[in-house]
Image 1 (cartoon, one colour):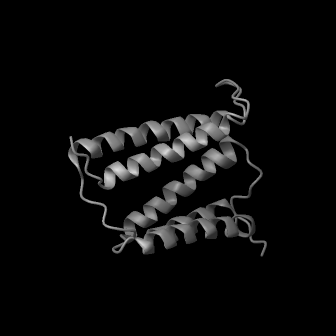
Image 2 (tube, rainbow, N blue to C red):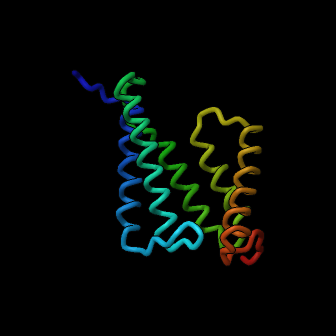
Image 3 (tube, rainbow, N blue to C red):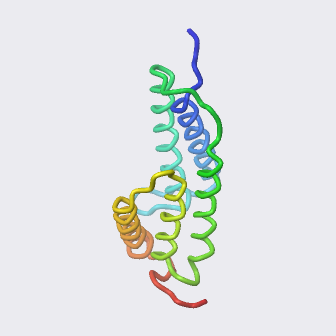
Length: 149
């Protein structure tokens, strides 16, 4: 059987690698239990889920093929990286919600045809999820909104 390298196979293997890396790194931390999670619980569970999803994507890509890998999207790579850097730089001075919105907007510019309505909805939903999970759920010591330049 000849294996064709395609986008789904490549992406799935990359997801598997990142998931396994996170899982192995988190093995050094105490796991805890579901009711009282230790610092290793979240990265181990997410790493395992990411690796499993990557395996599913890779197997589907191996079976069906989804188009050949033609090269890097340098625009996407640079803009998504810039979005992450902007998030880190804006988190303390502006707060979690504006930093999340900046991350989404800058990363969305990687698409050649960004859709404004979808972008606005995505910003709102992800900002609400970030607020609910990290500020209210986990109680991280971050500000939702801050104006301390």
